[in-house]
Amino acid sequence: MIQFVKNLNGKALLTAFAVTFLMLILIFLGSRNLQNFDAALITYLFGTIFAVFGITYRYTVWLQRPPTWMYFKRGFQIFLKGKIFSHLWFVSKQAVLNIGFQKFVYPRGKFRWLAHFFIAFGCVTAFAITIPLTFGWVHFVFAPGSFEIYEAHFFGFKVIEFNLGSITAFMTFHALNWSSYLVILGSLYYLRRRLTQPGVIATQNFESDLLPLILLIIISVTGLGLTYSYQFMKGFAFDFLAVTHAISVIIFLIWIPFGKFFHIIQRPAQIGALIYKKEGEEMGKAVCPHTGKEFDTKLHIDDLKIVTKELGFNFEKADGSSYLDLSPEGKRSTLAKAHLDARLKDGNLFG
Amino acid sequence: MSSDNLYNPSQEFFVDMQRCIGCRACELACAECETNGQESMIHVNYVDRAHTIQTTVQVCMHCDDPVCAIVCPADAISKDEYGIVHSANTERCIGCSNCVQACPFGVPKKEESYDLMMKCNMCYDRTSIGKKPMCATVCPSGALYFGTREEITEMRPRSTPVNSFIFGEETVSTKVFIMMPKGSKELKVF
Ligand code: HEM
Ligand code: SF4
Ligand code: SF4
Image (tube, rainbow over all chains, first blue to last red; front, side):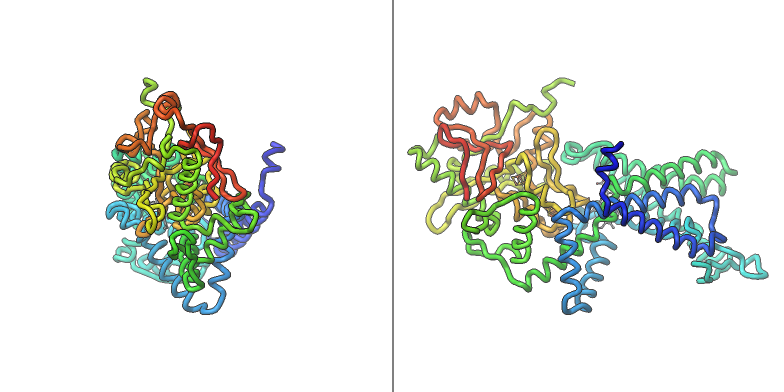
């Protein structure tokens, strides 16, 4: 226990408390002092609060690793230096393409992309609906003096109104069902892939690769089940479905910081890496002393020299020259030449 | 489960780049590996094209303390209980190329269109069930050999397997061996 407490990361703990506290304040304000808060969703609220704490903690610990910190720091330095609007445009465009649409998954496989897009889109829309509801930020009321017109309120302010029985009403009240179908389809595709492709089978394991997919399917199926149970089956198994749904969602939330789902939080770093590369190219290229060709940005190689040293690797000679100045091909050739020299010195080319 | 369906630690990888004849059979074999889906991960390149036709071959050396994994900002590379250093986790890797430039053996490849790093994982689909890696089964010249210590000692009586490499101030030790003149302890590369 004492060891556990000692191993906690102070900075991360502080950040996590601060962010959680901020969130509690926003919940209080957004729900108009809990007036609009839906008590039926209290278990989800606790799940979300724990998840936010865990995610912030893990994220802050992660940022402190030297290579991550280097990218994080450089990303902001580059972003804030000079042409800020052009950077804003670049970052927004890349975020829509790579985070919103995950376009880089497409070349890995058309269906792989589609399935993932279904999962991500389904989950993001589901979060967008359920989180504000859980926090009491969004709630629905009848318009004053009417039992036909419904109003949606956000932070206590009216945003839209619509007729019960209208298309908007249908889409709004069933949005979570659409999300569920998307998540189920996407997850089934990935599950099939993981159960049939020999290469994936060899490298996966149950808890970190199959369980997340199974969990997503359980969440979506029980969620759909809730609707169908009260609409078509007179509430058949409703309690069972409600409990299973709540438990699986809470496991999902609390698992975000530790497992596969952490990538949802971590992926935006990709945009940092993209702008780092783009701006680095303008600042000059590194040329390999062996091949004589450009192979990366000079910024990257220089930063990597710092990062490797911070991590306890020293690829420099006493005269200050660094092995990291060689390109990957240059490194392979240098090794082969050293090997040849050793063989020649021995007098036998082949041992 | 019978034990010949498991990773067999008595079989090891021995590389001798001086024997590489540049036939690139290993490249084709590598692309057959199920874990990298038609992409070849092995490197065959000319050492110094202007002066010699010598080629060299490079597989991942599966370092004991893998620089690639330690410099990864996304924790995408992991080493397992057999000492195999795995290719990047597909949902974590952000394609930054830290590993590509930091690996002292020039192994990881960045697949630009996937925004993903991919590398040799010693044909994990095969070695994890006791089979040999694809490249080592096709190499005609013995530059790549996968087998037991006894076998290689008998085949190469004048050589010693070495797995310690010097790069500047750094000494890197690896799971994969290279064949050096008898009695050698290490290879000073830089
Ligand atoms: C928001 C909810 C999201 C969920 C629930 C989710 C879930 C998943 C799951 C379960 C997998 C594993 C599939 C498998 O191999 O079995 C996966 C893979 C992946 N995810 Fe997400 N994801 C989400 C959002 C995102 C976002 C916003 C990105 C941003 C780029 C992203 C990038 C990736 C990538 C690159 C992979 C690997 C895909 C492949 O190579 O096939 N994900 N995701
Ligand atoms: S040889 Fe390179 S890619 Fe392989 S484990 Fe070592 S550092 Fe990583
Ligand atoms: S390219 Fe991918 S695996 Fe390599 S260091 Fe960057 S994030 Fe890690």
